[in-house]
Image 1 (cartoon, rainbow, N blue to C red):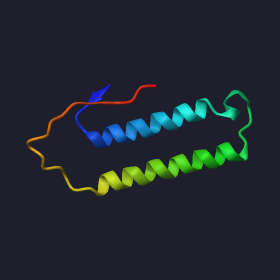
Image 2 (image 1 turned 180 degrees about the vertical axis):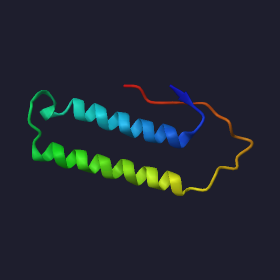
Image 3 (image 1 turned 90 degrees about the vertical axis):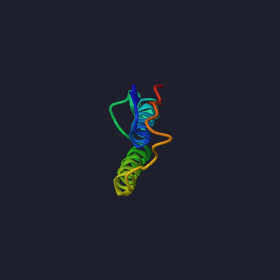
Image 4 (image 1 turned 120 degrees about the vertical axis):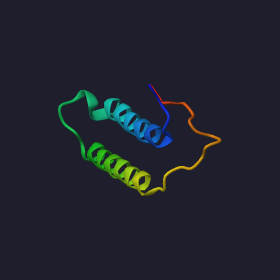
Amino acid sequence: MMTYNHDIVGIYNRINRFLEELFKGVSAAGSQVNEFDFSRLSSYMVNIRGYIAWVVGQPHLDCPETHPKEYVQYNP
């Protein structure tokens, strides 16, 4: 997947990295989630929400010499 916005790439990459870690975690194959996995999932949600809040709070880019630039998202 390709985009011209590096902030979207950051959000996409974080979400995919967290999903990959969740699917490969110790509790992934079982029907129960242990307290460590739940704590990790909570920290992922806090991280994503914090990053999105940071992105939204940034001023618009004014970089006519460096934009548009293609960014490719991380695909595990």
